Amino acid sequence: MSAPPNSPTLVIQTAFLGDVILSTALLAALAEQHGPVDVVTTPLAAPLLETHPAVRQVFAYDKRRADRGWQGLKTLANRLREQQYGRAYLPHRSLRTAALALLARIPSRIGYAGSWSFLYTEARTKPRTGHETDRLLALANEASGVYRPQLRPTPEDERVAAGLIDGDFVALAPGSIWGSKRWPYYAELAAQLPANTAVVVVGGVDDKGLGEDIVQAVRPSGRPAVNACGTLTLRQSAALIGRAALLVTNDSAPLHLATAMGTPVVALFGPTVTEFGFGPLRAGDVALGVDELRCRPCSPHGPPQCPLGHHRCMRDLTVAAVRAAIEELGALRPRH
Image (cartoon, rainbow, N blue to C red; front, side, top):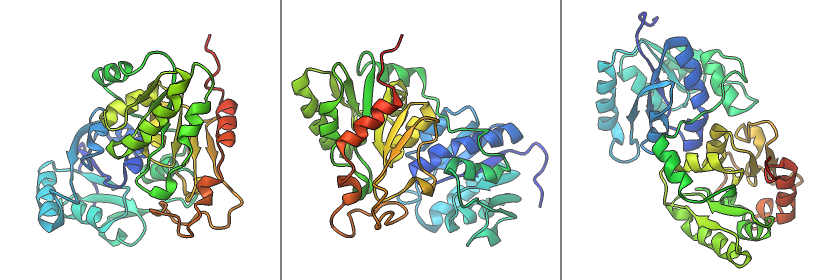
């Protein structure tokens, strides 16, 4: 069934935060084709999309808590049905996503071929290789490289970020919800950064302890160091990362925030690999990993702990190697 002319477009993307950030390229492509789109996403990601120029309105869907189960799905579907969408794009391959679009009675439902594609009206092939951003663009029949992830913090977000620290600084993101993705040497790296290099640690509330360890490691040098973990909203964190000279991060959401804000990145990969499609995207950015280990990658996301107990994929990635990557990137050279 084809979509009625001039009917609004919906995108349902309730996957991990990084997936939502990378999906902003798809939102821009679809807005170019159909006008600004509406989005169903998680409560965590919703504020990031509310200020995006390709987005008309955002529906926060708390699928694991307040809106969990059949009743929550049905309630949201009824709200969506009132909008009379002509088409829905479904980048997240899940039964919940497919059922939501079907229950909302959206006549044209476009998703990737797979387990639940019998609930779609059109199933498109998702490329097996390439960056996830470009694979997502295939859902809109767009060529790779045309659109890139983008976030738009507000002026107030920028003001809060600017108030944390003066001048140039390096941002460090030591956390991850997956324990095996955490590189253990951020404090040592911070202590060894070049003279006059200020440091800001970014992350969530659970990363406060890691942030404090890093600040304590920098303190003897007299260089400025700020632990911003758990003190900022996601949009404010994006604004802060956007101000950084570079970001050093694990394979986690801050990597994608930096991509969307155009910040140079040194990304550290342990149990996962860039071939999964979630590495740095900006030309010149660096991804590091211990390539000779036969046990990596060990899972699509990275387990809570190393299955073999040695965690060599991160422990063998040295501070010297990361410092060399930072120098290669050239982001800390004096600006003229």
